[in-house]
Image (tube, rainbow, N blue to C red):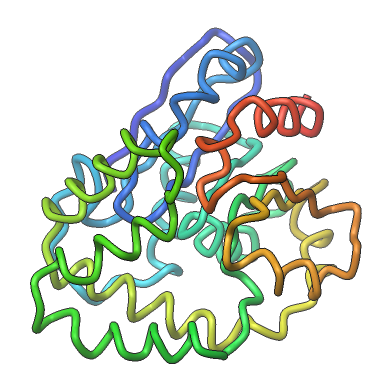
Length: 252
């Protein structure tokens, strides 16, 4: 797994876990605020960024184990985490597989954890069957538009689409397949389990995000969930000022 560490001469570390077809640049609007407090750890998931993986038999467990190995090799004993979308699924596995106390405070952004097996589940099933057949432009354009429908998101919308075209299509297919299987097994999760694997946790979603309604229902007005008004799936971009204030208050 390709990774990069930015040493800001701080004692604390912050791990970033990106969305599908994303990379560290997705968090660009958080860097200036957070570099005052942390050294940064970025990882490229298989097939993303500078990772040129073409294998299609990887899983979230494999990715989590690779991240744990990076921490051990770099002598990073503990860190806080910000994860978004796909990254939040990987974080879920990472917390349960990592040594105790490796992760302190964690932020799940725009998570798909706990999403029900309704029409979206059937759509995912459909995608996992047609992705190898059709050009990526047919399905990635509408998917990325759902993630980033606002004009303020236009720059990142183009970047995600470009990144999806640069990925091996079978690697991309595998992500949709394991995301689909993951949602089938996570839609009934009780989020109280997280307190056993980290010191504190926070969920942040945008109100325009299609995954937010079910998450609010699952978490039942929990103080661990904050919904940002008029924010999209990538709420760290569409409402970066509000998002930055929330994570600074929580992490620091």
